Image (tube, rainbow, N blue to C red; front, top):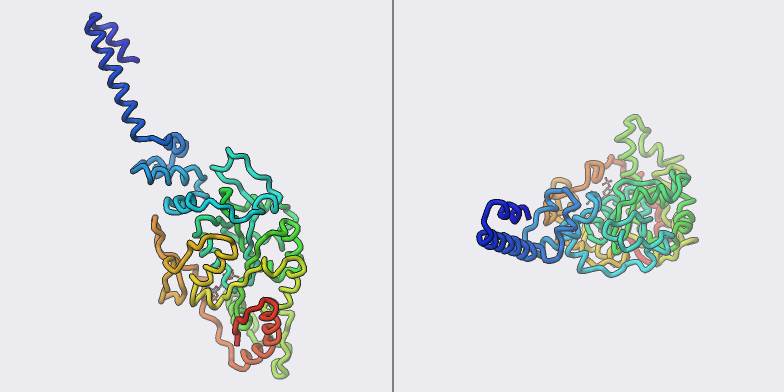
Length: 371
Ligand SMILES: Nc1ncnc2c1ncn2[C@@H]1O[C@H](COP(=O)(O)OS(=O)(=O)O)[C@@H](OP(=O)(O)O)[C@H]1O
């Protein structure tokens, strides 16, 4: 427009006519060029996000993927690979998603930004079973978003209310499921009823591990924080020569899986609880994660191509993601060298746990072979 006015002032009419035509033609060509570059209006969507990586447009396909991920707040942002998977797999995994949680369905306009929702699935235990590994492995699935830290809502923070709890959750798209993990839930008496009150459709995951190894792992962790702790044997036995185990010691009590499970089965059917083998999670993480994905109604996207065995750590770690970053192993507090416990004490504990383990195998219909 400025161009037309300028010509109008400076040039005679015939020149003006020609100048105006050139001006209009160049405007028209610019418009055509713009349309060819941004055929889907993606530029409108991404322009709201000042992140440089979101403004880059290199290729129509990649731009489409990016436009989806750029719509999310940074904590909910997906990699381009995840975004394309998400588009390909938009089926609802949890029919009860919203109604079951008492969370109203968000209006369509909110979908692109995601909403904080109460969890659909919770890893409820057990402490030192491998809960962090399961959470970190499942959350690479594009249809899963998880609270990073343990919320302890149903045991320590219940008085804060469900809105507080929901506030701790990441934003999710309607097709994504929300998860959290707090291992102490499994042994807290009130928790099953409280989760049931939130939603009786909540899916529960329990990572179980040989209770003797679990107890030693638990003790090793406490010792690392409290160096003057009494010996493992002093805590584990009321009278070691008589083989009387102290069931009131938490590290022992947590391993009585059959007893704790009874409490959960008062509220949830067995089919709604999935048990992950803590041992197989280390030897075959992809196999265990395939079962977790099936249980959650997710497409099997986390597979053996995501893992490698890190010899230094002695555990499976996550490979470098396609987009960026470096290979990821769990932190130093996962996979500690255990305190040496004498063989007799271990045998005594095995004898102690055997009937509880057998009962547990019967209850869940699976032999975990903790011998
Ligand atoms: N991939 C991988 N990397 C590291 N560690 C792994 C992994 N998979 C399972 N584990 C086992 O997880 C144990 C810790 O369990 P949790 O994460 O449930 O511990 S906690 O309750 O949250 O403190 C931890 O126990 P310790 O070996 O006794 O430290 C590990 O044996």
